[in-house]
Length: 184
Image (tube, rainbow, N blue to C red; front, side, top):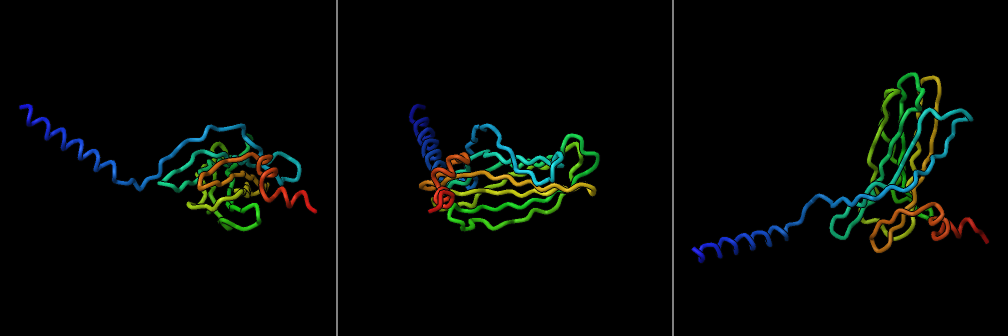
């Protein structure tokens, strides 16, 4: 009986070892602890903005040596909105040297009920080169009477393929944007 157990266990161990070699096509998702939320810039000519926009780092997606940064985008009508709000936004990623990593991509327009919102996960492209970058979302909202444009930016760094969210202060102190801002 003892002789029979060894081959079975050996087969299980070999099977587990072979299974461990097979690569998954799904990235490993490593959640990011959320820091203090940063406000969006509002272009609403004074009054309360019709929409609020939040864009926060959510997770690092790892697939082998390749990483992507995932952001959670939430666009919500203000609390006292009286009717549905049409929402449309663009997403772009620009390097600190002014080069576009991802040219503006415009979302389809969606109608959002006054009591709900729109959520979307937005990711950086895989294999992003080293450097400092800004992800910029421009979101427009309209209820047929009032229009709003909100702009929100989040900064990140890529170092040796690793994606690192950074604060605006870190971005402007350490990136080429600092050189452009300080001038000759």
